[in-house]
Length: 300
Image 1 (cartoon, rainbow, N blue to C red):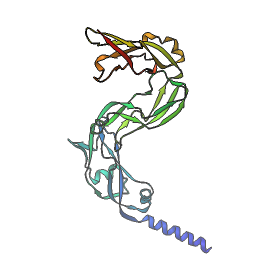
Image 2: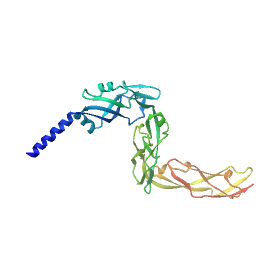
Image 3: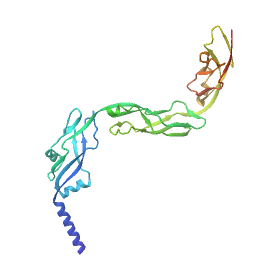
């Protein structure tokens, strides 16, 4: 019985306390609504300290959840050259944001300037930072690509104009032997929370096929020889090795390659020619000449 009466007394005390009026100052979060699409507000975390007088029951909701004041940019603000200005009276707030049982005693600050920027829409390319290593005997038959290969960036012109490209995360992909379709996250610049991006990740793609090595004997062509001279050189043809997919192996012929020795690129103390591979098919990978020097004799 004693505990029961003690509980009743405690409940009556709480009700008595909450029924009284109290005055306190608490921070209100400013919620921005109906912002014109062509503008972006640069002040993200604005608060308003409001001194209220109301009974204890009303105070409970302010203490348990963060209170907020809604600023309607279609009617509550005035625009100047640098900011949207919110300058409303206590009476206006009292009539629009609070009920009759809450009295506003003070607002701080009494005026809020929301700096704004003009939105800029820009498309920037994506740069691949991932490293792809293929399994032995495998390679890509075309270039590695990302989809999408560009990102639409929307935000204040002072921030968006500085973004020239976006990089993917740095990642190493090993032992690739099948078609590549790897999601990669994008790295966004720091301090650009006001900027919006059309995607947050891209897909790294490549067609991977079985490759084999091929070798062809390619004739050597000598150019820019001395006037009124006959140049005899050896060997007349060199071996060119390359990698190609099994599907395209039969499509590679000698006509797809060209090896040239240029007399004008020879040093004064040099007594041999350096063969250069000046033409190779796109289907062939890692094409190279096996012989690095061509002997020659000049006869007149």
